[in-house]
Length: 444
Image (cartoon, helix red, strand yellow):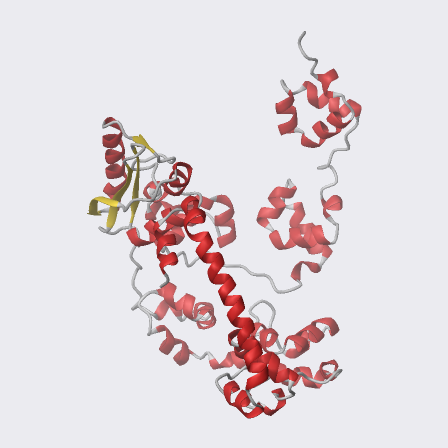
């Protein structure tokens, strides 16, 4: 590693420009000069056979272009690129090839999913969508799996794949198609070897650490289960209190001091609070912006919601989206703890399902505001907004502002700031027409 890179790692960004910039600029100029000289030498010195032999190190045009662009340029200029037949170039179909349904169908039969079809034959997928051939290619609505090739997921095949995993969530993540078929057919209930996945946060590996800036008598106390990763974040992320303090005062970030380790999750919040108060009583300036404590630290939401409480609350909902919309914090804690709620169905509508205006209208009638419509039926909301149906579905939700309506709205607010926050459109119109001084006369 060059010496200037080692200096950069040790110094902050404020110190970097004065120490390293000149060296970086010099190295860059030398690199450009060396690259120019090599191009001249190659152009005048190497023969055609030698250039072809040098190109044998690369197997694709992308690799050649990225590793040695000057060699690629010389091969093109001397007309030698066609002689390098080992460099595999992408073959394109002739014009009009994908306008024939038989050719598109042949390509689709080579793929199991629509995603694979789009990645492998992008032009064929675009023409199939444009001409309305997707339904004729035997792709089922919603699951995107070829109907003929779905038959490979038999009971024996799903059983064999599921037996490779200890936890049900791993089986769902690695093989979603087999998992969904096993759950739909009721085979999942017969897989009795699955264990409950342990809570990743319920460990005795929590660490209390501190960054002590002795020059400013300031300290940051933190809690983590991965000190190496957390140290990297404090040194590189702009929203970190440690990073911001080091930049504002031109100081180097010190090494983290381990105060206590091997702490359980239940006691980690209290321990963090204890050390914060201890440093504060000793006269240190605390850099922590977030509150500390058992229910106020980064593990506060996890401590607040227990597994039994999450399960009992989730039983009031039938789909995962309803649960997420009603209890977003509890939903996040469920994912962190790895709690599996099998009765919550993950509903995903087929492509083009919300292109029907009547379906969007029925969904909008279940909501009282556009915001609720967006949260509960995001697909229908996007389709309605794109096709300009929102004004028709919610005709009375947009106010037409004039002088009288602005005056009436301003009378409901005590100050200009409240008027601006509560009725932003009315405030903008009032400011443009100089009505604010009339609604809120300044005191003499």
